[in-house]
Length: 418
Image 1 (cartoon, helix red, strand yellow):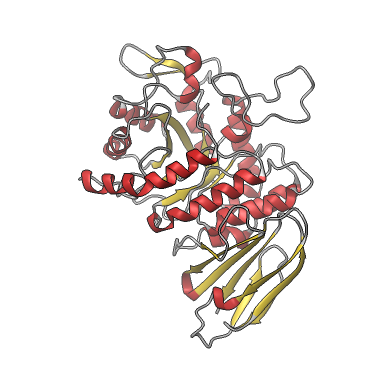
Image 2 (tube, one colour):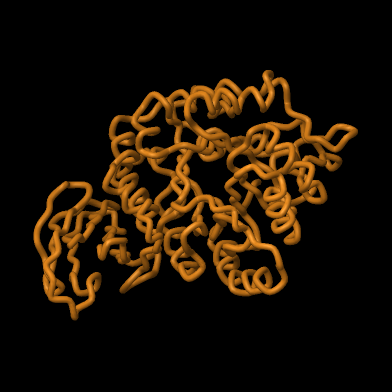
């Protein structure tokens, strides 16, 4: 399908990172330099909740679908508009979610005689300019999808002659996206060629339209894109989420303001097991402290009040959007099989953040030595705020914070301020 989510592929991506980034830095004379995404982008992508691959397989089969029916409904113009209206009419927009992105499936799989992408008029009867206008009229931004190969990922459904990939068409497609009013481009990697990533960067720059550039491929450097995938495709289960969070830690040195590591879209809201609400909090917290893009992958037209509260928690989002842009790092045990996982990092204004995740299905007493977060040489007193409970207390670098009976796959997220 669009990308394997196996551990081996994700590890291979991590091993290729240093070489791929070095090649890009040495061989490219141009730079991204678009001044965009100064904090991690926030928005929505339909693939995790509505995606249907080239073989007809649903990305997220709905357990309540009637037997014998397709367990998902895909996405089209009406679905995307419903999503946009849901974001605009709920606290999501005020929380900062602004990009409403398309994913694979908006073309017929082919181009016209002038080389322009042919939009699937059955799914998008009013066309892309109109759709973008509707999204913009809601005070939101419009995101598009393309691929650095011959064929977009799900367009393999149309056979070997499908040609809607952007390889060799970067200039034409970038101008098409600009003409459509696009504000964000996700550039995928089905049959991709490494040369297409900087080619699309340059083509987007030449349009003169500000378009955030997100890539999934061999290039992971700030001179090529605003954000880049660091892992294979995520799934709606705890193991997949933890695996990606741990792998993403290995890319921290590449990240900076305007250049973000992307361990894939959020699965918050898609975790329906008995620990689902806790897993939602923990997964969202991990993405927040890693300063990962907050791209929603759940059906925002049909989510619980608890999911909405998690996704719009002001204190958690403030950590993610902190202007320092520093990715929190794993300290102590860093295996995806560890009983607890701890991330720590710095925030602007002399602040710090720590996240402790219970990686077991049973409750545990969690503990945090403040000296692992705040330099031990400091004699200052800090106010610690546990984001999800709202509880605060004064601490010093010699303090130890204890959190009894934290449920399975739940977490504590602490912000330290002077």
